[in-house]
Image (cartoon, rainbow, N blue to C red):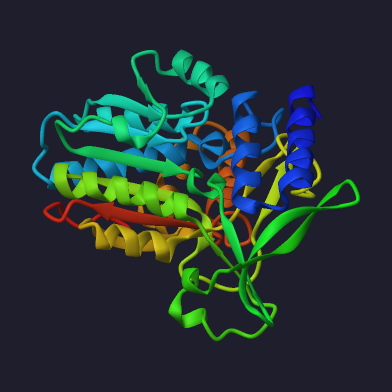
Length: 350
């Protein structure tokens, strides 16, 4: 654990001792802010690997989808490419190359809070405009928005049904170790109606930060035009149970053990995101599993084309394809949510 991560943990312990348990959202939010601001966590030498780093096919097919829906929307001008949480810029480079092949050239906007990752992105995409959040994105034309493994890192709240009603699951201390405890404030009003009468011990998750960001994006799609793809691991309908986890060195670790030293995530509620987008006036094109969507977009043909050079190359491409689409790997757990302006056409693959 780095010195700054130790300082964060010490600060949490001091705060809990002085004022009582803190929310999981505060623990997760501050931990991830420290974690991402100090390092590039991607790749074999990092803590995890994302789909764009697995294969160029992923970003290329996203670029193809964006170019296709733009073409069928009448090829409007002054279109901006927006990516939330763009990692190393790998997805953007692959998508932009695919879009350019279909005549779509556009200004790049990257929404990134991490100074460490901004530096990496600036080298890959020197002409890109950086934003801390979506509020400063341009408003002079349609937006083509991509968010790959962005929403899973947003801070969540967990609500626990107790004999005294719904309470927020908090972070306290057992001796010197962080531990989950039930809060003392009633949270019944924050629980969806269908969960109000759940049995004691039921735990559900909610992510107000995701709802707020989706509301901003949907407002812009409705007002400015454009389309969006949200790709992440998650579920289409809220279920009971904790999905809060931590990844370090490509392995799951105790999410409470070392705040700021591991990537803290939770599964994304795609149903809730779609509801917010619809409520704000965006068109919900559908939700598909990543495997089904990539197959519909032609990943098999693309893999064959890339693997023609040599048997060894073909075997590598086949492994990459399998990792992206097989149900036992990323294909089923990861979902793709498509959104668009109300007057834009349907999107392929949904």
